[in-house]
Length: 231
Image (cartoon, rainbow, N blue to C red; front, side):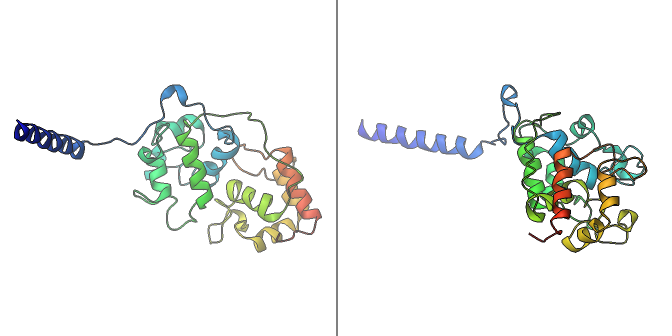
């Protein structure tokens, strides 16, 4: 009787082991009723500017682009969600795979600057929280913060550097992806502030209708008035 019991236990152990090893565990997906977003991330203010600056450029993924990239539009929420976003699951989202380097082709392409790791992580967190279309979000901007590292550099990365990066194709010959070049651009404060304020007579920047908030403009203005320090 004892041997029969031992044999049954062994058989049960083998069966459980086989079932466990043969299971294919799908990546976790946030349930639909929990996809309420991350209150610290706003699609309109945090995510869309990254796509606009780095992806929805002429010749790449804008509504006016032609060629291979024209089927992927990254200039508004609906088009971004149509291709390659699985709400609640960054690992299964094609767009996240290519910007994170876990699947090809590499995006942005090698001829252009890669997204900052902080930007990749932010997009990943946004997808994981449900890829919610947050608009008119409460501003987390603080005008008392106007250092280069704490305010200006992140704004340049999100809104500007995707078009204005070091290289022959920098828009208008203006580069904004490093401190020295930002200082050069900001030395003509009337042009820079006029552009980001969308003042009549100045080129509107950032492109595609996105405008920095009054708080963000104030941060840049204070940094300029404080001597444009590399702080």
